[in-house]
Amino acid sequence: MKSLRDRGQCALIPFITAGDPDLETTAKALQILDRNGADLIELGVPYSDPLADGPVIQAAATRALAKGTSLDDVLSMLQRVSPTIKAPIILFTYYNPILNRGIETFLQDIYTAGARGLVVPDLPLEEVEALLQPARSIGIEVTLLVAPTTPKERIAAIATQAEGFIYLVSVTGVTGMRTEVETRVQDLLMELRSVTDKPIGVGFGISQPSQARQVMEWGADAVIVGSAFVKRLAEGEPHQGLEAIESFCRGLKAAIAE
Image (cartoon, rainbow, N blue to C red; front, side):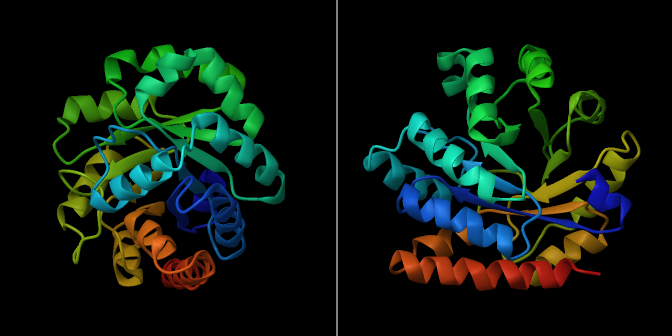
């Protein structure tokens, strides 16, 4: 993402849930997003207790789990499809599955499958180093989140630790589509800029090209869009969902292209 920023470009990061409606569709979706403007792609591993996710992504995870989608299934699919994709894959998962597998084993497994980044929304800052150290040696960039409620001194600590980019959560609460992006995002971006020169991606609540454009104009280095992709992919037959995310991805990319 830093190279994009250095060229004055804002990155587009779509999010989809692995296994919804099925892993074959997920594989096709990754390729479609890659071909239609995604600079990085966030792939959510379905989890039974997704505290940070709103109703759309929770429902997608529930459907994927009901079909028996496991972390091993997701990694197997990713290993098959990642060589065909240019956009780096960022895995989105909660901390418990990482601890269950063992931190180093988990990191090695996702690297082998083709992931190059990791977002763990419930990772406590106090435990970040236990994940960051082995991740660095394996080649996985761990992205940390900053929320609107994060105190300034904690923002500085997170910015220091974060790798790849800093994930600025635009709303207080869970993921989901909003009709407007909170203007506080602009203040938060300025606050973050005062403590770090690392790239900043803004996510949670962005569902329209005009919102993506607004966030870019406020100074974001990347726009992260999740629920709006997950919702489109889940509607109708799989081929209809794939067509819907293709045109939506193109529209978002056009909105933030200089």
